[in-house]
Image 1: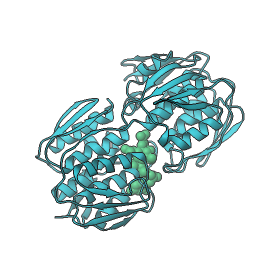
Image 2: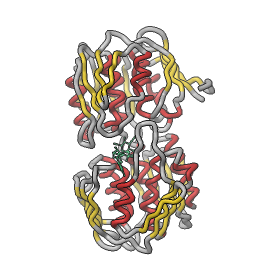
Image 3: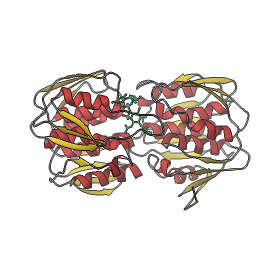
Image 4: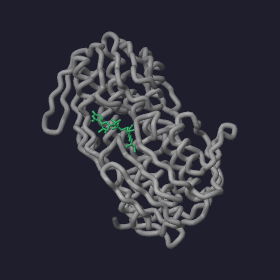
Length: 420
Ligand code: EPU
């Protein structure tokens, strides 16, 4: 198993280019199931989750040429089944359920189990598909769904769910009649999926608001689409620059989808400015404690909570960080404590009292964003080196992170095959 070794204490300075968004690419790869013919995705990040999704599409019967930044998906034979071996590797595999059911009239998809950050049920996906006329039963860990032809309907989600909204949008695109989705997630990745579905010939409106309307079609066409840049990768490097007191020019990502995060970073004492097409992130003065609470977009993203916490670990004062999306997303806290952080957790809130310095340590990555937070902590740590084990979590969602950081002056290297 690979590990990452970091010698911290150096401000990162230079340019970093942001890759395509993982959480936009995954549903769009699944949307290729809605049509015959070859679709072309551009600006796809080279990540383990993209490989897993490609394997899943191949298992289903598609021909996939996965060569990021381009992925081509073609072929017309579909076996509407997603086995446990693949779904357990990546929960987002559940995104094939809506397209398979709409396309084939039936689908058998393994139920994703819980994961490190929470139990993550898919009841809202199933409730929505049932409202579109699907018959759904659960059998030995699998969702078995059938519906000769889905029918447009109104679906009211109990809470905004990102992949739930996406699954329903894709299913509704081939349903008979119009579907209205209410209380939808409003993430930019949903707007991006709507763009693709519209390119395929569906009529989707309202994406990015709480109510989305989809006029279903009898057939959809393949597409050619360049994926938007990854806002969470962007935010992660913003925090890394701010935490190390660096000066970074972040290229290829707009500021527009990051308002809540940028507001908090500025309040913490980090300067963030648009510079042409790029974003400049700098910090000269001390970091200040800032409270934050995660919430669905456009609120503060849960996928940035762990990284933001590292910043607060070295800020002046005590901050309060409340996680409202997932019930167990503080797995990074014990690891950060091993690096000298002062964090007390009460329920869903972490109270972080800033310390002047973090110290390097051997730590364990537990999930994707927790891993990113440990990398940032390693960059900040001034005493001793940090070794982060189980970096396969990081490889799921950050393209060439150690190479990108090394190019801006960090001392970071991958150690291959270190025992877990
Ligand atoms: N929920 C339910 N029932 C459902 C669906 C969701 O109770 O049927 C709950 C969840 O348990 C959670 C909340 O609703 O408490 C929101 O979960 P959501 O469904 O929005 O999460 P997701 O779609 O499974 C996506 C991202 C996550 C990101 C969350 C929240 C993808 C592939 N994954 O997950 O990304 O944290 O939205 O923004 O888009 C990551 O990239 O590290 C990651 C975990």
